[in-house]
Image 1 (cartoon, rainbow, N blue to C red):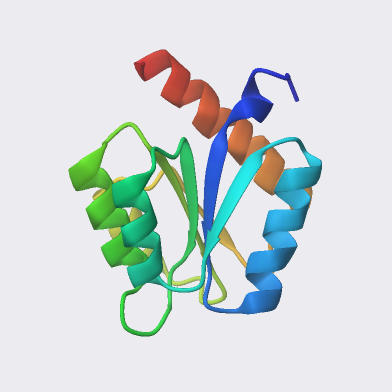
Image 2: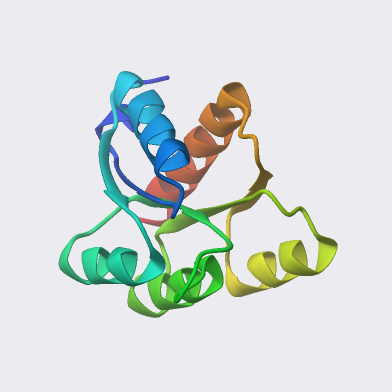
Length: 130
């Protein structure tokens, strides 16, 4: 990946610690700045205080789910790319995520090469909109 892409700030949101920390380590190794949130409420608080280039959020979480995180992000800054990840690949949830403005929808377990490819596309799209 190009070094310009690697300066991006990415928020990883997942209520499963191993998934959240695993993604964070992968992205940090790729040269990205990474913040994490253990739930949707924490993520929304972080998004209100910081400008992220990309948010990768689990879809199903207790209290505040990934759809609500996506809605809040799009209200605050429509240019922020959002990748939804889920262990429950359902057509209805895919369609809802895309209709709400998600850039991509990825099923768990996340394949690293697919994730890297999508991140590159999201960040290139964001730069074009800027």
